Image (tube, rainbow over all chains, first blue to last red):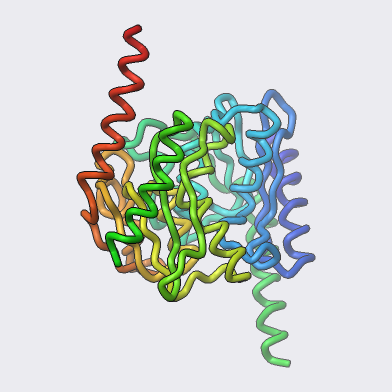
Length: 152
Length: 152
């Protein structure tokens, strides 16, 4: 089931890829059902808050008609940044399954560890490395495509 | 001018107060003009991403038709949390003027320092303590009001 839902997050990331956005995708799952989906739309929306995770949280809150995502799991193709990790803590999500690590801006252990900080009133169970190769290959391909355009 | 714009952020926080939301307000200023406003709407919107700062950033991006808030200053009544501090870094805002400190969840020096982390590719000029008494008194009054209701 873990791979099944990460594949759904990858499908979201592919939507971003096709729109020339950095390919990151996320889904929120509760009781075996997807209740929120999102893909990075920063350039399209011209708004740097429109990351995959924020949009997936927004949809999940609408589905549940509640701000508390208790009992929910997020599957995301790339380690969330500080903004998104903070949003997951604010939303009290229980579990977070991550594809690829982000050593430059990741906030789930790489640059910061926002999802497990004892001073905050909520911590998240985190699992790294689910379908990591697929998730990181898509990102590498994307930046390779960008660079090849710059060379034209 | 610093007090002038912080008063505008306090006006936003008062809107939250009147709606029984934790009273936090924010404005984004560019070239002496307010281009984005926001107040905390977490309960109303049933979505924990709807903090004052995120909503002010959303409006500022719409006004500028751009995700980069270069040359902009945010005035906010309470030290931003990890989500909002991360959103400000993602948006490349230049300056951040804060009313009251938040020792429990503040991410601009209190629990984390996301706005000045050398590993990230953007840092923000931060000033604390502008109209601090007004900003913190409003929060204290709000929580006192909540407690008095619980006692009824």
